[in-house]
Length: 288
Image (cartoon, rainbow, N blue to C red; front, side, top):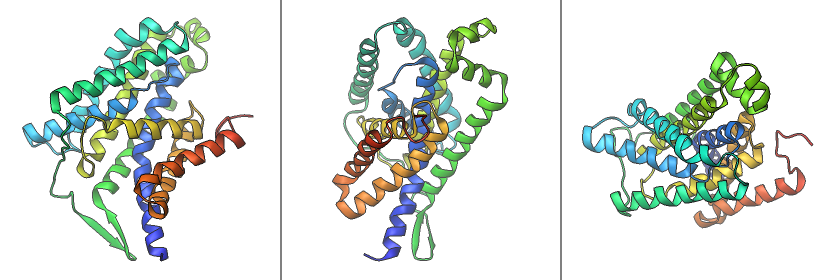
């Protein structure tokens, strides 16, 4: 196997890492603020993909342009989920919270099966097959767009959290709810915002990959599994850790597929996760 093929796999993994980072950042944002592990995060990605596909099918709207609609729709959906599903169980035992988010995942998956059937759908744009050839390596233009879009959104979220008053309020609630209340911050509003943003990021990830990824009801399962690997590897609650871990996971998965086959790509990813839990259980960005 030549070096060009290996470099091709590495570049493919890096480009996919941006999408994994978006899903994982949304997951870690919800956990960091609301303290709920959202097992339905993958289904939020799936909803974003279906919204994007429907906008393209019904109105001919470009997938990337449709992000202006997809993200607000998923934001509102996340707010509703927090208001009517997460809020009543915030003080419930962890097991009840897990059952609720897993149940939400199952409901959303089966709702997609009911309305859209199990058929695989795709979006074909004028640039879907575009590719750049650099030093013998083929770069998919839609994947480059998706990676760039993911980096832009992650950067905007980082600026929002660090430079705006609302973002600082979110961080304050994540660090200490009681103290933030003494400062006049309403935690309930921050919870709505956190889940809304987490859902919007997942929807954006779904919209960004539609030009080169099939849309089907169970597509979210893969993304939520990888998202959990990323947040555990990069330390749950750390956005910087999620970005670093997504690069590691993306490249590991791509190289695993290259050397071990398509069915074993995720095995390599989970092997890295197990090694991390053994050697550094707190994650790459965690304290001992």
